[in-house]
Length: 532
Ligand SMILES: *[C@@H]1O[C@H](CO)[C@@H](O)[C@H](O)[C@H]1NC(C)=O
Ligand SMILES: *[C@@H]1O[C@H](CO)[C@@H](O)[C@H](O)[C@H]1NC(C)=O
Ligand SMILES: *[C@@H]1O[C@H](CO)[C@@H](O)[C@H](O)[C@H]1NC(C)=O
Ligand SMILES: *[C@@H]1O[C@H](CO)[C@@H](O)[C@H](O)[C@H]1NC(C)=O
Ligand SMILES: *[C@@H]1O[C@H](CO)[C@@H](O)[C@H](O)[C@H]1NC(C)=O
Ligand SMILES: *[C@@H]1O[C@H](CO)[C@@H](O)[C@H](O)[C@H]1NC(C)=O
Ligand SMILES: *[C@@H]1O[C@H](CO)[C@@H](O)[C@H](O)[C@H]1NC(C)=O
Ligand SMILES: *[C@@H]1O[C@H](CO)[C@@H](O)[C@H](O)[C@H]1NC(C)=O
Image 1 (cartoon, helix red, strand yellow):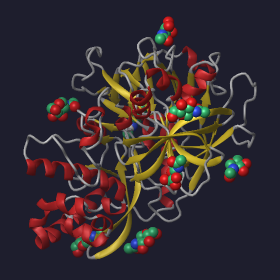
Image 2 (image 1 turned 180 degrees about the vertical axis):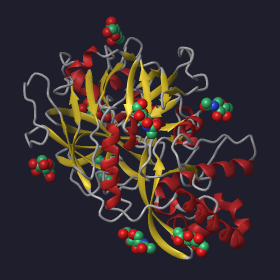
Image 3 (image 1 turned 120 degrees about the vertical axis):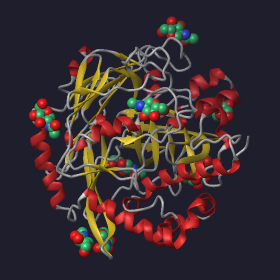
């Protein structure tokens, strides 16, 4: 299910003028070479990872002799790259097509083989999807996704059904398990610490180490082992979520065997804004004075200088979340009293999950980058070996990296510096008021069309990319924040479209906003093709 779980949020890279691509340096350290690359050094094997405003984390790879930037994703497995225009040397070719549908976006292509270089590691014959059609990805920022989860997803299944299990076990591995498989003496782990950029320092040091541990983080091996409790994802048991010290009461976990009172969290570097149950989102943001839930955009609007104390607990270990990771300053164009104005609003980063629980299984919530920036995490495959899914005992070990005694001062300093670079902040209530006015005028003009969103959206791309008709046609959903946040809008739109179609066709229609294993072909993104 992972390919569908290719759980990740795709966000606009740059919402406002002057936004900088901060460069954060990730290190790949080859086991046994004894070489530790300096964080900012340019030694061979050093992999530069770019992050724009902490939304996504990228790794540079060399594929068939050409350089590409790919998203680092612990929520998926298959490697895909859009190679158009670059002379990639293939080591073998197939005619097997593959198709991945993520939480947002999709990719179609053909399974091919080539040499992959990742830091100091070379994989002579790496399987990947040579993408031919890519939907809702920012190809100018990254040309692919490198999954870091488990080997039983689309590539594996396609090769297995074409050439059998033995061939799949040896040829269909993800880069990370290929690295482990080609040198069995390598420890089966990779470690990640996501850097946090700020206006005060635009270089953030992150760590991405294979088969070793980052300098200063060696004690991660003494942290409690958090076993993977559901297949396919890095899904681990979470004891509690504390909001200002108070434990939030989650519903019973949907993962069978989860200890009573606990839930299961998937750790996913590919998801910028963690999707969690709506009630948990409300519990977090309702504690912030001045924060308001915006019924038009479904975001919480939070005063930019306010946050709350949020802590996650795993195996008794507390992981405070930095207050700066709880909200995201977003510049929007808003019609205020008849004048279109650029203003800054802070939105919630922990967001109500809209993932269909029937498609996305194996966890109760996803902890993405807004959590992972607060930990040093070691992902260990244990004795997992490709094709040997029954005996592997993967686990995660984590160290907290946010200092609760300093975080509030850091929050005030850094947020003030950020806001100084942005248009003036606007009061949450003023945004809601402006959206209300906009909706009322749109409704006057075009009331009956809101029920027809599905057809309009499905049939015409131009409609959804043109600001004017967007505002008119999708008055119900495309207000305020979404105008500047087109890709977030796309998520809402897809969900809305699916619901409308379902409503129209009646309850016998099976639908899937994203692909999942057993009905992959039932849903064709964009064309809205369904079959029963
Ligand atoms: C790929 O990147 C490396 C390191 O920056 C550089 O030395 C090399 O020339 C690049 N290769 C190509 C084909 O652009
Ligand atoms: C290329 O793939 C074919 C199967 O399509 C396989 O028979 C052949 O051995 C492969 N060649 C190499 C060099 O891997
Ligand atoms: C790989 O994909 C690119 C872009 O879609 C295409 O131009 C190229 O022909 C493909 N190559 C192979 C071997 O599939
Ligand atoms: C528990 O589940 C119900 C029904 O799906 C939902 O309405 C409610 O918000 C959930 N509560 C929590 C704490 O997630
Ligand atoms: C966060 O916790 C600290 C220490 O317990 C407390 O002093 C502070 O008031 C809390 N902040 C908020 C916004 O609740
Ligand atoms: C919009 O107009 C109203 C009434 O004239 C006024 O009270 C309000 O402050 C104005 N809003 C802004 C953001 O200027
Ligand atoms: C808002 O900012 C963007 C980016 O700087 C700019 O292109 C746009 O014209 C601004 N809009 C208004 C109404 O000032
Ligand atoms: C699977 O892993 C276990 C434990 O490492 C090992 O004993 C067993 O032989 C493996 N099975 C296969 C088919 O590789």
